[in-house]
Image (cartoon, rainbow, N blue to C red; front, side, top):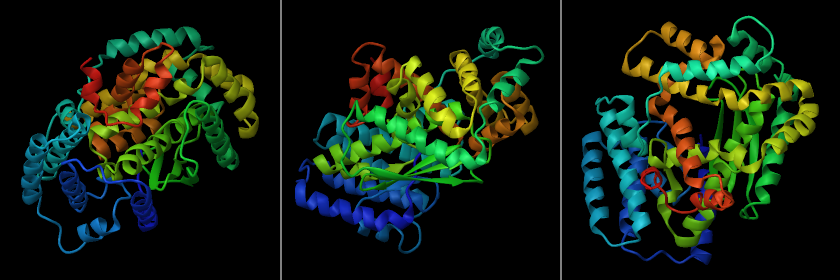
Length: 425
């Protein structure tokens, strides 16, 4: 996930405005007027939901004006959204740019309907907000996956306890988390640099935090800068840390946003990309590409080398324990869908927290702390939970397994794309 730091807003936006004025002509197509209305609309909706505007580094005046006076009433914002949707459909402009704006506006309208008190089943909500509908996953799928895990995990006793023992063996001591995080980011950054050229001034800072419903977050600051936060409420698993830093940094959120800013905002003057509404189709692609990032950068052999030979000594984690957990990595993958089914139980069916916790623990093979963290995330972000699994599935299907997969992947990070475009082929 990504979010912007308000303290960096004016500086980043000023840098962007100066760079665009100096080196980039306005796009000049008829959509530009609609784009300004769209950006201002998203900022206005953000007055009603503090989570909504996930990033903004556009003209500072638009942000200042959006924050002045009383919030625009939701019924008026709904009317503006529908009027703007009609205008975008009628105006001439690049087809991919129009499609992106149209789908984003469907999501804006849906979120305003939610803020008005309207409720949707999670599948329908996901389709309207994120432009893709998640399939159901039956517990029988999870039971079948667990049989495979059972054959791979040594020892006796309950499977969940044995898997948890593998995870505990790769917990990073708290005094080594910062160093392990930095080394993981550096490994991802180096591998990413061999595949794509990023803006020369791209950079990031890292911070350890607590008290959040998520595990990690990328706050994109504009000007090719990010702030990457790692939540240490739960123990940090070394094997998961590399994947997390690929997700938040390279080739994930930081890379995605830096390329969009370079290619579309500065390159074409498309200011719609300076604002990021969290509940929008853009998030499905952002989370999907970020989740696919580790496997894009590293083969299985390369990943194991980085984990066991580079990161384990820095993190003070036994090399053999790292490799032992990595052996069951693929077998555990089908269990990633358990969180989404737990969210349906919680939010669609109204099941009690303890019942959902028991479901997550039984089928997801996680401990109670992680199950309750999953519930906190679902309650806060609702259908956003599907962006990680469904988004990854969409991206993996789109890029395929052939020699062109890396080229296709990076192409997705620097042009207007919506999920339905990828699922319709």
